[in-house]
Length: 330
Image 1 (cartoon, one colour):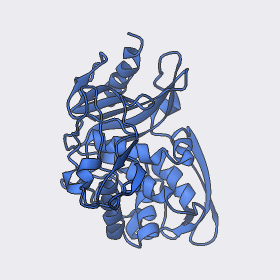
Image 2: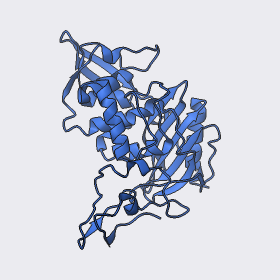
Image 3: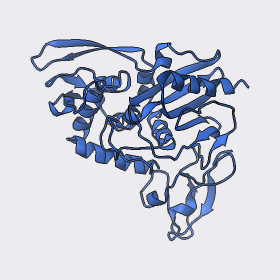
Image 4: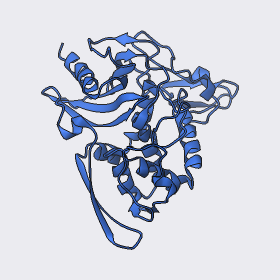
């Protein structure tokens, strides 16, 4: 079941809450806790003058909406703290487990960072790496090994961000777009509210751990849904390795090869025959454990998004995600 447009009359006194149509497998309901977001202006909403008639686009008409756990298919995601599996074409909730529970997202945060970058008109604009962008309080974080003074395009930084999951690239993107990391984080949180991701709060553009940096499986779906509107997003996510060439501070050319952190993309983890792993974003920290937001497509072109948060082991995470795909044949 999915939401549809309706020709209706509404006076200016009507609230946005009364104009939202949402659907889950169990019927028409709303479980994403958007009461705090009703006052935010949204594209597609309209409040009509008395006597005026217009076609209204509902906020949730193109979304999968889940307000409770759902097991429409048999999948083993027992190790994960939260998980979901949605058919993006039919808007059917095939599986949902703790999808509104606030959890640490690790580098799946970079989906929002990428979304704000993709909204920029020119992806070939250049950005210079600052000392602050490559300075981290913890060691061993994933980076593109950028140096102070390096000059890259926003497009190159997106490849570093999404392919190798580079935390330094995330910081450079934030500084380029907003002028500072703090200003960019404000943009991230504002964007989250505007798309309905009201159980989310960011404190950095990369996903490194902070107790006040959290999201939900459902909110990540909303962010991913928005980012998929840009063809280059999926193009980058499906890249096995990206060969970059950019300039250093002294004007010399720097070359680098950034391999994908996604085992589906690299082919290290297979999918059932007739299915394709289109692309996805990984995330791992000790607090968040193993996380993945992944898009699949079947032989008929139907698309499915699968999300797993808080899995204790990377190999188990991929096995649990494979169980979603296997369930389609059961």
